[in-house]
Length: 201
Ligand code: GAR
Image 1 (spheres, rainbow, N blue to C red):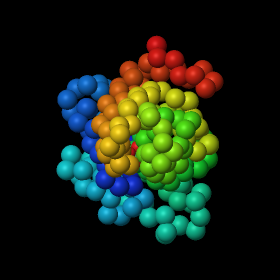
Image 2 (image 1 turned 45 degrees about the vertical axis):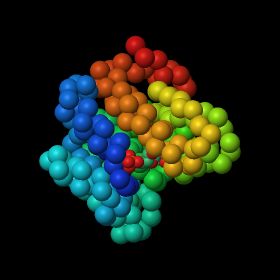
Image 3 (image 1 turned 90 degrees about the vertical axis):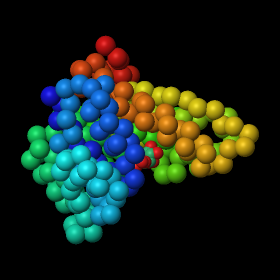
């Protein structure tokens, strides 16, 4: 069984999609052992508790620096024997303390077609740039920001009467499909990383 930790900062709809797809049996042989938030009142924590999943708030402000904060998270990960870390709307850059402990075992969902529109508010960046298609990307996390090997991408059109919000909603719908799909493939041992290329075996 793949033991999963989910790192979150907010609403947690992508966390919910993984929970639902484990409960439905679409993702097999995987279990969410803990949800960790860097924001105390993140609704994602509530979602975890509703499903009986341990929900932990780790307050970045109570640590001297980023390595100390990450060591605390690592401690929680070790306590739960975690195999796979999911970043589901986690709004911090994961540092080398965590990355080096989990090489190619951290997966992020990003609301744009990488390598375009990295960083925060990617849907709004894409909308303002005037692209005619955007989408979302699930990728392994490396030491760069939104630069790791791509697992799945899905595109959506930008329509004439879109706002950044309606575009974001269209992208989110696809996030909720490809994020669980990537988790399923990982849990089945079907993802092989060859340099930048992720092969689906
Ligand atoms: C999602 O759109 C996710 O792709 C994005 O934040 C949202 C979180 O929503 N992540 C990033 O922008 C990462 N830089 P959720 O909390 O409902 O899953």
